[in-house]
Length: 363
Image 1 (spheres, rainbow, N blue to C red):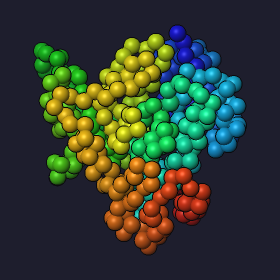
Image 2 (tube, rainbow, N blue to C red; image 1 turned 135 degrees about the vertical axis):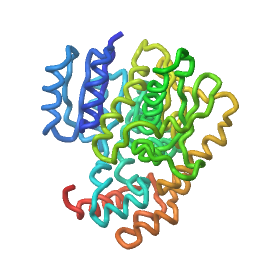
Image 3 (cartoon, rainbow, N blue to C red; image 1 turned 60 degrees about the vertical axis):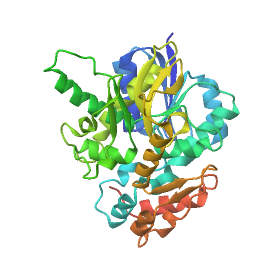
Image 4 (tube, rainbow, N blue to C red; image 1 turned 90 degrees about the horizontal axis):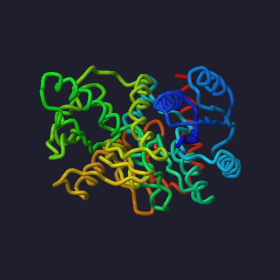
């Protein structure tokens, strides 16, 4: 069966994912959507030149529930890919501006007011219209999925993060296996968090081994965490969009109708905090933890790693509490961003964050 795939958001990483997904096959129709036509129509035109599938663009404000519902009804997608946010993290990460430095020091958690609104609206629309197709979310899944799970709104699975770590470990394993006869260890399973991606991509393991990502090799689940920190180092920047897109493709390919089962690692499955190994089969996701790995301990580990990204706790009702370190980091530039965050009452906090970021000017 050839699938209909709908993208919410059509920025750089969304375009890279769309191109890769079309190259994998199994997609007969792909629709990019965004709040403005702008460059998105050029993206559609370029994809038309490269692929046989039918490709189109829908202009929609993803914060407008009625407009979004009309578009989803019109498209009737088999898979929704949520790749939109109100502020790109790359407008903050790596910048020299004092405010950007403070936000980066605080951790990405303080950017939740710019990442939550669209995915929350998408999931509310999906639930309200009774759509049962899988939704894959690129926007801060390690934190957003457990927040939305409080109201039964968690997307099916997240993209990036743990999947990126999986690819880095796989690349190191492939390099090592070139000198081995046996390929029996090629199964990789990762438990890890967004915060750890930067050390992995820069090939710099933390001095504290308790902060290392957890990499399990083979069915027996042998720990080889060091594989994640091998390879060429890359400083943070938009070049990460390349591996983000590549890491999304195994997940998305497995979510297409009639796709074979796939074992991989991904963030936010089942509304969980952080990333875990999963099996994706017929649009459903189950955990694929190695034998002997305790689920509760794995979740507690990811929550500890989340604290390094500024989030101290996500309450069962979705309320977010930030760490003292995050509060200290933004005290002189935007102390409001480390106040407890009510995800169901975001308007004022989102407005303030957008004003703070716009005050930094263009990157």
